[in-house]
Length: 483
Image (tube, rainbow, N blue to C red; front, side, top):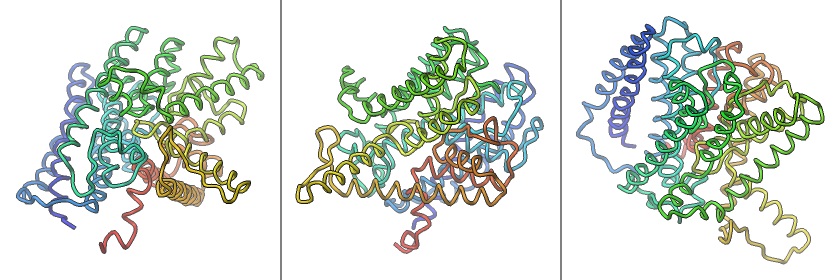
């Protein structure tokens, strides 16, 4: 294990990450909100620590293998999450504890969107901007991770699309094509963000809110500059714009790349995962609309459709924006939507959850087993579109599902051990492991009231969910450290 090379890379990352402290400081100057000093201090601290890690190891140029890759990816999120919490720790108002600051930072960087803060609209503009910016950079990191890095390590939903990925195939080291892939994805990501901000502004948001909400929308994060989230604007048009961009961001970004490079929108129609994703969204919206209508929750059909469409897409894509308190809906719907977050977005998207392609393959495997019961001697293959998948891919999906379920149960039981009730523990685990944000029970509005121990556990759950379980779980195996 080439630890010195890894420390050098982490030092470079921390120095690079320190630049993200500058825009909030500039925002503080513009709005004269008095919140700029913590960001300047965090910038200086990050640069010093980053250089201290990089400089003594600057001559190290080891050829990194997959094992080092796993460790770098995990440390990337853990170390940057820790440094992201620095401005929040240095803040005088609100005065956050260490657990609160770390929870908020990890929630932002992993695009979970769970918050410990209340009275958000009264916070300094610099703090509001920083929270949104954190989600945006986290979303970009997720895209590069899912499309360029994890397939190289042999984990993640995108390995199913290896033939189509314009990125690396080698497993031995990072190739120059990762940089090329990341560059193209960056262009798409930035373009979507600009388009989203312009749409929000045209629909009635001021520039600050439009930019901030475009950050968290394209990242499928869920942070807002108001306690009431999107409900603050009370605008069906803004809600609809949010839904459109959530669906775009929850699609596989390699599809966007293929559509842009080929100038052909048919790539979306031909993709089996995207079609299943749209079908899931349609079914959820119809079910929510039917139940809300039959219970006369809202005054008229238009408002009912607006709420059903927004909440179904927001929760199922793991964004977690809110226009109303969905936990107060008939209990069937909150539970249904929480379960829909387990599916999440498509592989290679900024969405959380297990990813549509994995759940679809589990369904196809279930159908195959039923067919085998009827015709034991028949040979059935599982196809994704027209492409027959090898059994090892299906086995990997089952392995992922087993690991996901195991991590979920362990974290939920640990939360109950801290004194949390069962509904809160279940929904908080689901919300953080699926990178969703809002839960039910004591965490329906915010996470400020739960214990510090529970916050640390949920921060770990966020990282597990963001790294697609295996990437972090492999570090706990003796084989990894012996290899």
